Image (cartoon, rainbow, N blue to C red; front, side, top):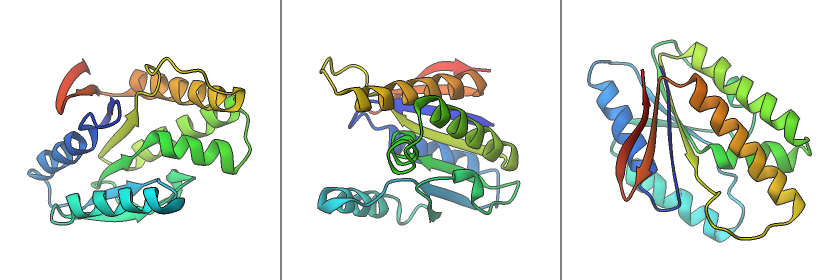
Length: 175
């Protein structure tokens, strides 16, 4: 099953995704993998990573840090994988590999579908970065367009899609 949980900064999407995984695990003895995609650039990023680790430390997740090429992780078919988060993964693929938007969209979308085929449950967390109304440079705008296309691709393939609004999961799609 493929699930997309998206929302703005501070919307509670991470906690919703973690709770979703815990609810899935009640019926399974298989491991929960927290697939962390954030590249720890700078003090703020390291603090955010530390905060997220502390929030999930007693929840039973095995953390795998993979900033690109997420389909390469070792998993078992019955595993529950929580990918946190798509915006970091897209930025890593886009900016560190110097790929064009179309290449990033194709690669990341394909990696997600391939990973989903290899596990029982894949929960993807992504950001809604499109409502700020601010002007950005061309490169940042290309990144944003790539993330938007990837989010749409995942939503089309997903069994369930939730939008996190003030800590509440609002159902956008449920098959």
